[in-house]
Image (tube, rainbow, N blue to C red; front, side, top):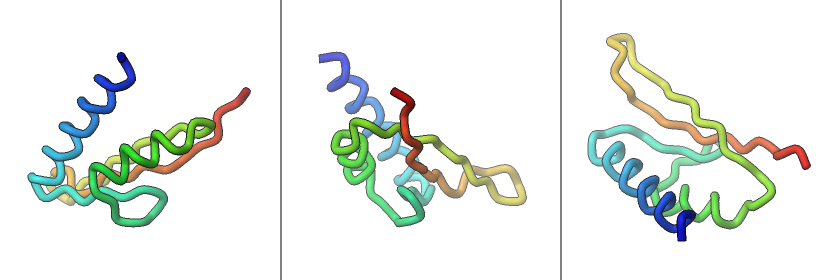
Length: 72
């Protein structure tokens, strides 16, 4: 149940970014908020690190998710 709430919150966050013109990508490929959620759900053995890309004025222009392998 908690995971479902976390994913709903992540989806809302990403949707807000997208609405504000922030580009989103996963491993270098453009992605929608739903594609980011799907990537998290499918790859249980991986975690995603966020990279925030800002323009010269410090405004967020891109949000990148890069997968990293979890240590077992």
